[in-house]
Image (cartoon, rainbow, N blue to C red):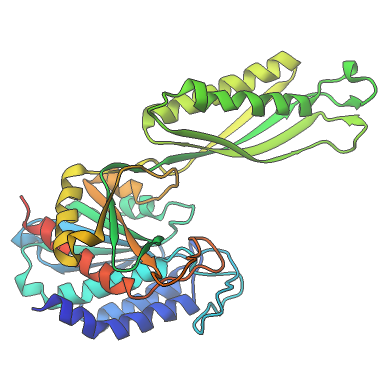
Length: 392
Protein backbone atom coordinates (compact mmCIF):
# COMPACT_ATOMS: atom_id res chain seq x y z
CA UNK A 1 0.00 0.00 0.00
CA UNK A 2 1.13 3.53 -0.79
CA UNK A 3 0.60 5.03 2.67
CA UNK A 4 1.23 8.63 1.63
CA UNK A 5 -1.22 8.43 -1.25
CA UNK A 6 -3.89 6.82 0.93
CA UNK A 7 -3.47 9.52 3.61
CA UNK A 8 -3.90 12.21 0.96
CA UNK A 9 -7.12 10.54 -0.16
CA UNK A 10 -8.40 10.46 3.43
CA UNK A 11 -7.33 13.97 4.34
CA UNK A 12 -10.54 15.83 3.28
CA UNK A 13 -12.61 13.46 5.42
CA UNK A 14 -10.27 13.77 8.41
CA UNK A 15 -10.19 17.55 8.10
CA UNK A 16 -13.99 17.67 8.03
CA UNK A 17 -14.11 15.40 11.08
CA UNK A 18 -11.63 17.62 12.92
CA UNK A 19 -13.72 20.69 12.14
CA UNK A 20 -16.83 18.94 13.42
CA UNK A 21 -15.06 18.21 16.71
CA UNK A 22 -13.85 21.80 16.84
CA UNK A 23 -17.38 23.13 16.40
CA UNK A 24 -18.78 20.88 19.12
CA UNK A 25 -16.07 20.46 21.78
CA UNK A 26 -16.58 18.57 25.03
CA UNK A 27 -15.10 19.48 28.40
CA UNK A 28 -13.15 16.99 30.54
CA UNK A 29 -15.45 14.29 31.84
CA UNK A 30 -18.17 15.18 29.34
CA UNK A 31 -16.73 13.55 26.21
CA UNK A 32 -19.67 11.19 25.56
CA UNK A 33 -20.77 13.03 22.37
CA UNK A 34 -17.22 12.94 20.97
CA UNK A 35 -16.92 9.23 21.77
CA UNK A 36 -20.31 8.48 20.25
CA UNK A 37 -19.17 10.13 17.02
CA UNK A 38 -15.88 8.22 17.15
CA UNK A 39 -17.76 4.98 17.68
CA UNK A 40 -19.81 5.72 14.59
CA UNK A 41 -16.69 6.34 12.49
CA UNK A 42 -14.85 3.30 13.85
CA UNK A 43 -17.82 1.02 13.28
CA UNK A 44 -18.33 2.36 9.76
CA UNK A 45 -14.76 1.32 8.96
CA UNK A 46 -15.04 -2.15 10.50
CA UNK A 47 -12.75 -1.34 13.44
CA UNK A 48 -13.36 -3.14 16.72
CA UNK A 49 -13.73 -0.86 19.73
CA UNK A 50 -15.17 -0.65 23.20
CA UNK A 51 -16.39 2.35 25.14
CA UNK A 52 -14.93 2.92 28.59
CA UNK A 53 -15.31 5.19 31.61
CA UNK A 54 -19.04 5.78 31.25
CA UNK A 55 -18.74 6.45 27.53
CA UNK A 56 -16.13 9.20 27.83
CA UNK A 57 -13.33 7.01 26.43
CA UNK A 58 -12.89 4.52 23.62
CA UNK A 59 -10.29 1.84 22.93
CA UNK A 60 -10.06 0.51 19.38
CA UNK A 61 -7.87 -2.28 18.03
CA UNK A 62 -6.65 -3.60 14.70
CA UNK A 63 -4.53 -6.62 13.89
CA UNK A 64 -3.96 -9.72 15.98
CA UNK A 65 -1.88 -10.08 19.13
CA UNK A 66 -1.30 -13.70 18.20
CA UNK A 67 0.89 -12.56 15.33
CA UNK A 68 3.31 -10.62 17.53
CA UNK A 69 3.37 -7.86 20.13
CA UNK A 70 0.85 -5.11 20.78
CA UNK A 71 1.57 -1.38 20.70
CA UNK A 72 -0.80 1.50 21.38
CA UNK A 73 -1.48 4.98 20.05
CA UNK A 74 -3.06 7.55 22.35
CA UNK A 75 -5.11 10.67 21.54
CA UNK A 76 -6.71 12.93 24.13
CA UNK A 77 -10.14 14.27 23.23
CA UNK A 78 -11.19 16.95 25.73
CA UNK A 79 -11.46 20.72 25.28
CA UNK A 80 -10.93 23.75 27.53
CA UNK A 81 -13.35 26.11 29.31
CA UNK A 82 -12.53 29.04 27.04
CA UNK A 83 -14.51 31.31 24.73
CA UNK A 84 -13.07 31.08 21.20
CA UNK A 85 -11.93 34.28 19.48
CA UNK A 86 -10.50 32.94 16.22
CA UNK A 87 -13.35 33.96 13.92
CA UNK A 88 -12.97 30.67 12.03
CA UNK A 89 -16.00 29.48 10.05
CA UNK A 90 -15.92 26.31 12.13
CA UNK A 91 -15.36 28.05 15.47
CA UNK A 92 -16.89 26.49 18.56
CA UNK A 93 -20.65 26.62 18.74
CA UNK A 94 -20.53 25.85 22.48
CA UNK A 95 -20.33 28.97 24.58
CA UNK A 96 -17.29 28.96 26.83
CA UNK A 97 -15.81 25.73 25.43
CA UNK A 98 -12.98 25.54 22.89
CA UNK A 99 -10.45 23.10 21.50
CA UNK A 100 -7.63 25.50 22.39
CA UNK A 101 -5.09 22.74 23.00
CA UNK A 102 -5.40 20.90 19.69
CA UNK A 103 -6.98 17.72 20.99
CA UNK A 104 -9.34 17.77 18.01
CA UNK A 105 -6.24 17.45 15.81
CA UNK A 106 -4.93 14.56 17.93
CA UNK A 107 -8.27 12.77 17.67
CA UNK A 108 -8.58 13.20 13.91
CA UNK A 109 -5.00 11.98 13.35
CA UNK A 110 -5.57 8.92 15.56
CA UNK A 111 -8.80 8.10 13.72
CA UNK A 112 -6.95 8.35 10.41
CA UNK A 113 -4.22 6.05 11.71
CA UNK A 114 -6.83 3.54 12.91
CA UNK A 115 -8.63 3.48 9.54
CA UNK A 116 -5.45 3.07 7.53
CA UNK A 117 -4.03 0.41 9.86
CA UNK A 118 -7.31 -1.48 9.48
CA UNK A 119 -6.84 -1.43 5.71
CA UNK A 120 -3.29 -2.77 6.27
CA UNK A 121 -4.45 -5.40 8.74
CA UNK A 122 -3.36 -8.46 6.72
CA UNK A 123 0.18 -7.05 6.68
CA UNK A 124 0.43 -6.25 10.40
CA UNK A 125 2.80 -8.34 12.50
CA UNK A 126 0.87 -7.74 15.70
CA UNK A 127 -1.90 -5.59 17.15
CA UNK A 128 -2.27 -1.82 17.41
CA UNK A 129 -4.61 -0.38 20.02
CA UNK A 130 -5.85 3.18 19.66
CA UNK A 131 -6.85 4.97 22.86
CA UNK A 132 -9.20 7.94 22.67
CA UNK A 133 -8.63 9.32 26.14
CA UNK A 134 -10.76 11.77 28.14
CA UNK A 135 -9.84 14.38 30.71
CA UNK A 136 -6.21 15.18 29.98
CA UNK A 137 -6.86 18.76 31.07
CA UNK A 138 -6.56 18.36 34.79
CA UNK A 139 -8.22 15.16 36.01
CA UNK A 140 -5.93 12.46 34.64
CA UNK A 141 -7.98 10.41 32.20
CA UNK A 142 -4.89 8.38 31.32
CA UNK A 143 -4.60 7.04 34.85
CA UNK A 144 -8.23 5.96 34.85
CA UNK A 145 -7.99 4.25 31.45
CA UNK A 146 -4.97 2.29 32.67
CA UNK A 147 -6.82 1.32 35.87
CA UNK A 148 -9.71 0.12 33.67
CA UNK A 149 -7.35 -2.27 31.87
CA UNK A 150 -6.61 -0.62 28.53
CA UNK A 151 -2.97 -1.79 28.62
CA UNK A 152 -3.93 -5.41 29.26
CA UNK A 153 -5.65 -8.28 27.41
CA UNK A 154 -3.55 -8.31 25.34
CA UNK A 155 -0.54 -6.80 27.03
CA UNK A 156 0.63 -3.53 25.44
CA UNK A 157 4.41 -3.30 25.14
CA UNK A 158 4.80 0.34 24.05
CA UNK A 159 2.64 3.47 23.81
CA UNK A 160 3.01 6.40 21.40
CA UNK A 161 1.49 9.82 21.86
CA UNK A 162 1.78 13.25 20.31
CA UNK A 163 0.83 16.82 21.02
CA UNK A 164 0.57 19.73 18.61
CA UNK A 165 2.97 22.64 19.03
CA UNK A 166 2.24 25.93 17.20
CA UNK A 167 5.85 27.04 17.71
CA UNK A 168 6.89 24.33 15.21
CA UNK A 169 5.78 24.57 11.59
CA UNK A 170 3.30 22.04 10.22
CA UNK A 171 5.12 19.20 8.50
CA UNK A 172 7.78 18.95 11.22
CA UNK A 173 8.03 17.05 14.51
CA UNK A 174 10.17 17.28 17.63
CA UNK A 175 11.43 14.47 19.85
CA UNK A 176 13.00 14.53 23.30
CA UNK A 177 14.98 11.70 24.86
CA UNK A 178 14.45 11.10 28.58
CA UNK A 179 12.79 13.78 30.70
CA UNK A 180 10.25 15.73 28.63
CA UNK A 181 7.53 17.14 30.93
CA UNK A 182 7.56 18.02 34.61
CA UNK A 183 5.71 16.52 37.53
CA UNK A 184 3.22 18.82 39.23
CA UNK A 185 1.84 19.25 42.72
CA UNK A 186 -0.69 21.89 43.67
CA UNK A 187 -0.86 23.25 47.20
CA UNK A 188 -3.03 25.38 49.43
CA UNK A 189 -1.47 26.99 52.48
CA UNK A 190 -3.61 28.52 55.21
CA UNK A 191 -1.70 30.64 57.70
CA UNK A 192 -3.53 31.06 60.98
CA UNK A 193 -2.68 34.08 63.11
CA UNK A 194 -4.68 36.28 65.44
CA UNK A 195 -6.48 39.41 64.36
CA UNK A 196 -6.31 42.72 66.20
CA UNK A 197 -6.37 46.47 65.64
CA UNK A 198 -3.73 47.68 63.20
CA UNK A 199 -2.56 50.27 65.72
CA UNK A 200 -1.67 47.54 68.24
CA UNK A 201 0.09 44.76 66.28
CA UNK A 202 1.69 43.42 69.44
CA UNK A 203 -1.74 42.15 70.51
CA UNK A 204 -2.17 39.90 67.51
CA UNK A 205 -0.35 37.55 65.17
CA UNK A 206 -0.07 39.02 61.66
CA UNK A 207 -0.97 36.42 59.02
CA UNK A 208 -0.17 38.87 56.19
CA UNK A 209 3.37 39.36 57.52
CA UNK A 210 3.67 35.56 57.80
CA UNK A 211 2.57 35.21 54.18
CA UNK A 212 5.13 37.74 52.98
CA UNK A 213 7.92 35.97 54.85
CA UNK A 214 6.80 32.59 53.48
CA UNK A 215 6.69 33.78 49.86
CA UNK A 216 10.16 35.27 50.23
CA UNK A 217 11.52 32.14 51.90
CA UNK A 218 10.26 29.67 49.28
CA UNK A 219 12.32 31.40 46.59
CA UNK A 220 15.31 29.66 48.18
CA UNK A 221 13.80 26.18 47.83
CA UNK A 222 14.54 26.02 44.10
CA UNK A 223 17.50 28.41 43.92
CA UNK A 224 19.41 27.03 46.93
CA UNK A 225 17.84 23.68 47.80
CA UNK A 226 17.96 22.12 44.31
CA UNK A 227 21.06 21.44 42.22
CA UNK A 228 21.65 23.98 39.43
CA UNK A 229 21.78 20.97 37.08
CA UNK A 230 18.21 20.04 38.04
CA UNK A 231 15.04 22.07 37.49
CA UNK A 232 12.28 23.02 39.89
CA UNK A 233 9.60 25.68 40.15
CA UNK A 234 7.67 26.81 43.22
CA UNK A 235 5.00 29.41 42.47
CA UNK A 236 2.32 31.13 44.55
CA UNK A 237 -0.34 32.32 42.13
CA UNK A 238 -3.17 33.40 44.41
CA UNK A 239 -3.32 34.93 47.88
CA UNK A 240 -6.27 36.13 49.94
CA UNK A 241 -6.34 37.62 53.42
CA UNK A 242 -7.49 40.48 55.57
CA UNK A 243 -10.73 42.42 55.76
CA UNK A 244 -9.74 46.08 56.23
CA UNK A 245 -6.66 48.26 56.11
CA UNK A 246 -6.60 48.98 59.83
CA UNK A 247 -7.10 45.39 61.00
CA UNK A 248 -4.27 42.89 61.43
CA UNK A 249 -5.30 39.80 59.45
CA UNK A 250 -5.76 36.63 61.41
CA UNK A 251 -5.89 34.38 58.38
CA UNK A 252 -4.29 34.24 54.93
CA UNK A 253 -4.89 31.56 52.30
CA UNK A 254 -2.70 31.07 49.25
CA UNK A 255 -2.53 28.55 46.43
CA UNK A 256 0.33 27.58 44.16
CA UNK A 257 2.15 24.88 42.24
CA UNK A 258 5.42 22.98 42.36
CA UNK A 259 7.05 21.51 39.27
CA UNK A 260 9.97 19.08 39.09
CA UNK A 261 11.61 16.63 36.70
CA UNK A 262 12.28 13.69 39.01
CA UNK A 263 10.49 11.90 41.83
CA UNK A 264 13.43 12.59 44.13
CA UNK A 265 13.18 16.35 43.57
CA UNK A 266 9.40 16.20 43.82
CA UNK A 267 9.58 14.65 47.29
CA UNK A 268 12.24 17.16 48.33
CA UNK A 269 10.04 20.08 47.26
CA UNK A 270 7.13 18.74 49.28
CA UNK A 271 9.27 18.34 52.37
CA UNK A 272 10.91 21.76 52.08
CA UNK A 273 7.57 23.48 51.48
CA UNK A 274 6.13 22.04 54.68
CA UNK A 275 9.28 22.80 56.67
CA UNK A 276 9.22 26.39 55.44
CA UNK A 277 5.54 26.86 56.21
CA UNK A 278 5.87 25.43 59.72
CA UNK A 279 9.05 27.38 60.38
CA UNK A 280 7.66 30.74 59.31
CA UNK A 281 4.40 30.21 61.19
CA UNK A 282 6.30 29.19 64.31
CA UNK A 283 8.52 32.26 64.09
CA UNK A 284 5.47 34.52 64.19
CA UNK A 285 3.59 32.47 66.78
CA UNK A 286 1.01 31.26 64.29
CA UNK A 287 0.07 27.97 62.70
CA UNK A 288 0.43 26.63 59.15
CA UNK A 289 -2.07 24.29 57.49
CA UNK A 290 -0.64 22.85 54.26
CA UNK A 291 -2.80 20.87 51.83
CA UNK A 292 -0.96 19.09 48.99
CA UNK A 293 -2.77 17.89 45.86
CA UNK A 294 -0.47 15.65 43.78
CA UNK A 295 -1.05 15.91 40.04
CA UNK A 296 0.73 14.29 37.09
CA UNK A 297 4.16 12.73 37.43
CA UNK A 298 7.13 13.60 35.24
CA UNK A 299 6.87 12.38 31.65
CA UNK A 300 10.04 10.46 30.87
CA UNK A 301 10.45 9.00 27.39
CA UNK A 302 12.14 5.67 26.92
CA UNK A 303 15.37 6.25 24.97
CA UNK A 304 15.17 3.03 22.94
CA UNK A 305 11.55 3.58 21.92
CA UNK A 306 12.22 7.24 21.12
CA UNK A 307 15.23 6.31 18.97
CA UNK A 308 13.10 3.84 16.99
CA UNK A 309 10.19 6.26 16.48
CA UNK A 310 12.43 9.22 15.63
CA UNK A 311 14.20 7.11 13.01
CA UNK A 312 10.84 6.15 11.52
CA UNK A 313 9.90 9.84 11.47
CA UNK A 314 13.07 10.77 9.59
CA UNK A 315 12.26 8.15 6.97
CA UNK A 316 8.65 9.37 6.74
CA UNK A 317 9.03 13.17 6.60
CA UNK A 318 12.75 13.71 6.03
CA UNK A 319 15.57 14.22 8.51
CA UNK A 320 15.42 17.98 7.96
CA UNK A 321 11.91 18.00 9.46
CA UNK A 322 12.76 16.08 12.61
CA UNK A 323 13.98 18.10 15.59
CA UNK A 324 15.74 16.60 18.60
CA UNK A 325 15.10 18.80 21.61
CA UNK A 326 17.70 19.09 24.35
CA UNK A 327 15.67 20.76 27.10
CA UNK A 328 12.51 19.54 28.85
CA UNK A 329 9.51 21.73 29.58
CA UNK A 330 8.12 22.47 33.02
CA UNK A 331 4.61 22.00 31.66
CA UNK A 332 2.68 18.83 32.50
CA UNK A 333 1.05 16.08 30.45
CA UNK A 334 -0.91 13.08 31.70
CA UNK A 335 0.64 10.81 29.07
CA UNK A 336 3.15 10.51 31.93
CA UNK A 337 0.95 7.72 33.32
CA UNK A 338 1.39 5.69 30.12
CA UNK A 339 5.12 6.41 30.07
CA UNK A 340 5.42 5.21 33.67
CA UNK A 341 3.49 2.02 32.91
CA UNK A 342 5.18 1.05 29.62
CA UNK A 343 8.29 2.08 27.64
CA UNK A 344 6.85 4.95 25.61
CA UNK A 345 7.51 7.91 23.33
CA UNK A 346 5.67 11.22 23.41
CA UNK A 347 6.57 13.82 20.79
CA UNK A 348 5.49 17.19 19.43
CA UNK A 349 3.68 17.59 16.12
CA UNK A 350 4.24 20.94 14.45
CA UNK A 351 1.01 22.77 13.70
CA UNK A 352 2.24 26.33 13.19
CA UNK A 353 1.63 28.38 10.05
CA UNK A 354 5.02 28.96 8.44
CA UNK A 355 3.76 32.06 6.60
CA UNK A 356 2.52 33.90 9.71
CA UNK A 357 4.55 36.15 11.93
CA UNK A 358 2.48 35.15 14.97
CA UNK A 359 1.17 31.74 15.92
CA UNK A 360 -0.93 32.03 19.05
CA UNK A 361 0.04 29.57 21.79
CA UNK A 362 -1.88 26.63 23.16
CA UNK A 363 -4.64 27.56 25.62
CA UNK A 364 -5.11 30.90 23.86
CA UNK A 365 -8.62 31.88 22.75
CA UNK A 366 -7.01 32.74 19.40
CA UNK A 367 -5.09 29.47 18.92
CA UNK A 368 -5.29 28.05 15.41
CA UNK A 369 -3.65 25.00 13.86
CA UNK A 370 -2.45 24.55 10.30
CA UNK A 371 -4.59 21.56 9.37
CA UNK A 372 -1.86 20.18 7.13
CA UNK A 373 -0.41 18.81 10.36
CA UNK A 374 -3.14 16.14 10.37
CA UNK A 375 -1.44 14.49 7.42
CA UNK A 376 1.91 14.46 9.23
CA UNK A 377 0.28 13.18 12.43
CA UNK A 378 -1.37 10.23 10.69
CA UNK A 379 1.85 9.36 8.90
CA UNK A 380 4.03 9.51 12.01
CA UNK A 381 1.64 7.52 14.18
CA UNK A 382 1.39 4.76 11.57
CA UNK A 383 5.12 4.67 10.83
CA UNK A 384 5.96 4.72 14.53
CA UNK A 385 3.58 1.87 15.32
CA UNK A 386 4.85 -0.24 12.42
CA UNK A 387 8.47 0.36 13.47
CA UNK A 388 7.76 -0.78 17.04
CA UNK A 389 5.86 -3.86 15.87
CA UNK A 390 8.79 -5.01 13.76
CA UNK A 391 11.64 -3.87 16.00
CA UNK A 392 13.10 -6.42 18.38
